[in-house]
Image 1 (spheres, rainbow, N blue to C red):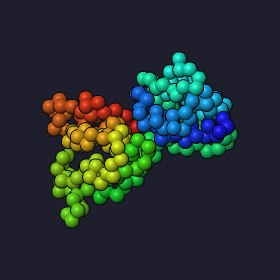
Image 2: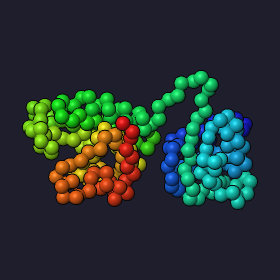
Image 3: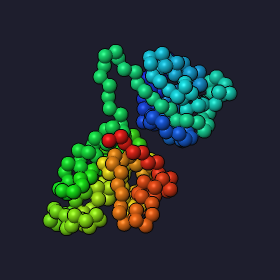
Image 4: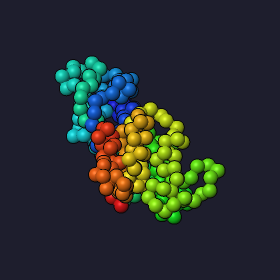
Amino acid sequence: MTPQQDARRLLEALEPFARSGEVGPVTNPMYFALTAAIPTWHRFESALKLLQAEGYLFDQGKVLCFDPQGRRGERPKPRWAPLLTLSPPHAPGAPSRPSWDEMGVRTAQLWAERSADPKLKVGSCLMDRWHRVIGVGYNGRAAGEPNERESLDQGMSEALHAEINCLLAANWNGEGATLYVTSEPCASCARAIINARRISRVVYVSPYYEDARRGRDLPRGADILRDAGVEVVQWPA
């Protein structure tokens, strides 16, 4: 096996775990994938240097922070460290591609256009940890009901929210999913997201204030999610 072949195998093994800005331990699936691809520290080190020379950017060259005390010929020993941030090189003049977050937000916005709600159209998109879409939804009445609001008053539309429709249709694939929503989840949807137990991150575009809760100084949906340990990001409109 040449260093060039090892470099390709390393890249293929790392790709499913690459997620910009994520922090946490080196997981068992990641460790097994890497050691299966490249069984010795010496080969791993050589492959990493080749990828860096090609322009791939890792977290200060400390990909997965394998134990530096490991002797050559031994299997790498994972420890607590930042997970890798993998940025493929762009050829000069090549068009840049949208980020996975941008793809998720755009998909949610596209599905929002399906809503018949004249007051607020909301769409959502659920991606698994490998950035595959596993669910979509938009706000609307239950199947078979008239596709119209019962009232224009807040909370009285009787529509199922986009997040709920997305969760109901989700084709779950493990944990660590990200939910993209065009509007901040309400308190009830936030609790449903928490109880799904597979969503670790929520990205929303527009803030949403529930008048009844704001009048009583109760937490918003984003605050409920954060208190439960879910990462919440507001996407710039």
